[in-house]
Image 1 (cartoon, helix red, strand yellow):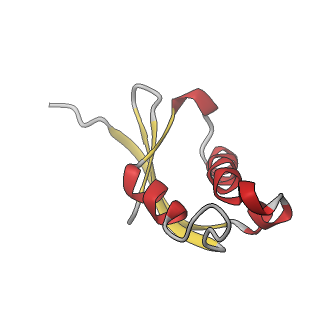
Image 2 (image 1 turned 90 degrees about the horizontal axis):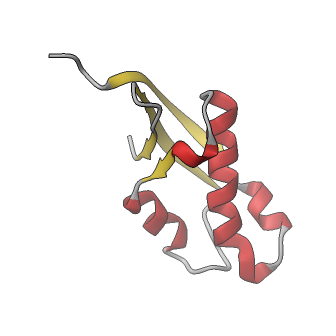
Length: 88
């Protein structure tokens, strides 16, 4: 049996760039910043990035105005090209 997991990395993503946007767009921008930072570390396409629902809930937990300043994530790149972002 071959395992789908090819590459795995755990790192902290700073989300301070989300606070540079309008107050009512910060959580949405935080998701975009998260994807941008992952693409810098793991080569791939933005269309293949899958953000786990738990991370999405963690970013949106305090509402659209106050996303977290940083978040610890685990990124897994699979053989089929998918990039999975989950909590460690």
